[in-house]
Image 1 (cartoon, rainbow, N blue to C red):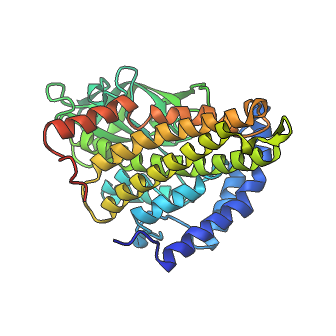
Image 2: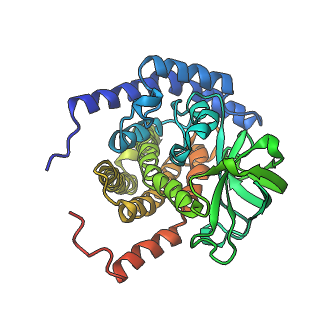
Length: 388
């Protein structure tokens, strides 16, 4: 059993780490200042400039198939890259990607949605969550009623990432009320100019999701993604692909924050000694490191299963549950180590404190992950001690 990265994988990891240190770390002060003053942390034009630089280095579409101009690094390297990018809070992502379910587009849809999204010409959002259907995704109420060759959509979606910026949405609506989530939900590709609108939702973090409103929005049948009444499975594929990535991001954030705490503990002196000499601080640092390493291997295992085309849903739930809680524990300790300075907006610690609290909620709450894990064990779908 070999746990080491190949030389090529190490090169990719180091290249991304160097890019983050060289291009993104220097922007952190400006991002904090802009956010304190109520402006976007980083302008879209700057993000596009950074994406162009990354593309020149070969980082474009890291999960996109080669036929669409991507690097197609695969799940394992996606995990490694996600850990490296998460070391900074600068809101940056490599370009050239599209939502995994957009690859279900037919040839005509690919020209209108998939390829323009990959090229950065269009922006999508995933619209499943509703006021009464978050963790209980099967309870969606939004209806789509057929009218000739069109469908009329009515309803509301909430907490939609990129919902204010997107020019089209992947919208999930009930098309067969009797079956509901069990074969009666369809995914529609709905352009903003078809009539839906969005409003900003203010949150405790810098994440600004949207509410989307559909009032008699007419969508042609040619805009059905995948098959009629086959939308719920698409939605679960989208959600499942993101769970283990959250664990990877948790590792990156926690590592960066822990290093900040280690550095600070050497310079902060109380009663004549650096606080690094205090057992209370030492134990917080030790516990944090142990939890980070545990999360790293849980996340990499889930990614490895995906790489091997094996079912990684159980492993993803474990990684997501452990990772999202781990990063909250670590950030809390790091803030405590920094004392009053950690509580200020001069450092990113309090920003992380607000941001990572969300990670225990979205893409399936802690409670949902525990339900999935226990259900798999109690029903015998997964056996204790048979992970390998």
